[in-house]
Image (cartoon, rainbow, N blue to C red; front, side):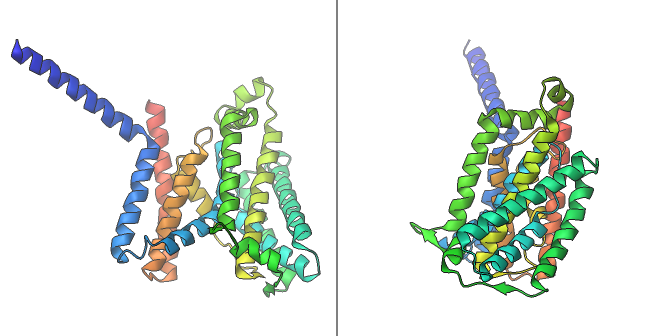
Length: 334
């Protein structure tokens, strides 16, 4: 009798721990948090704890805020099965444009909104190439990337435009209650657009358009309108990021923000947003963002040569796409 009782208890314990194991390891966010923790531990050890100092954490948050704004837009686009390769060029063009406006005497309260409107116009043009010309998003936005990088150089004649407007510079380096303003802007946008994606009808439409276009059409959802809004949103975020970066550098630099779009896509895909569309959350993308920026910051602190840093970022993108591939296989099997 006692042996039977012990066997039952053993089976119950085994069942409990197996369920616990499955629940933990099936949660992608738990896995991402473990990866983030490992990055923190490894780089803290390699840099003699300099990595985990408050000043460095703030640097990571500031860098994350600029990439993070674009990550929000790219996450929405990836959920509908699209991608935008132009944000880096749009950010550089926007940074040059806002500093040009300021140098001509416009106040930042007029210059920044004007640049955001230009960014939205760029997104609208991208959506037209996708919806009307039926170009693949990759091809359409690759062309836009080239166009606006070139325009960034043309507008400033290939030279940086410096700015001294104190109000504008505060946008990049100022703090509120010791929290950097770029971080406040990013976290505010992240919270707003997380709620929109998770709790509103528009957010549900985004998932339906990405997950089942046929069902979206039968439900009366206008997919092209959803595309337009998301491309405009992504380019507006890129323009805002470009303004913040220009404020931080006190100048508009035509070569700035190279690879910004790839960092944003890497963060989103690392965070569990499927490249095939219909799956993912901004919460996961945020963790992916911190993993990527924490990794980038760590390799810079180790003084690894810049060209090897580029290689490492490329390998991280390959790893993110590989994880996405295996996640999709797992979803299909389940």
